[in-house]
Image: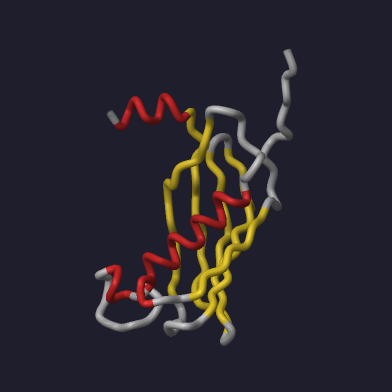
Length: 131
């Protein structure tokens, strides 16, 4: 039997994801506002996606991460047609808790910044709790 041992999760892991903003990404579409600009919940989903991508190939089989805490400041609007780049960098490992610095930028500058904390879970045990 071949046993593959993963390198322990370490600070500095990072990932970048991009989004071309469409009408489906607006505050109107998310019902989080009444203006046709990139919705705060969509930015949150984008930076969370970057945190998940930063951990690609780093977790043991049968484990995953789930969101625990979000601290996000939405600084600037992005119009439909704009392109947003979100980045997440793992800055702290506290046992099963992983703290990421996250940011999102468009061609005009910083759109959002903050921290996202995720927790490593055993998928089966986690789903048992949800049932």
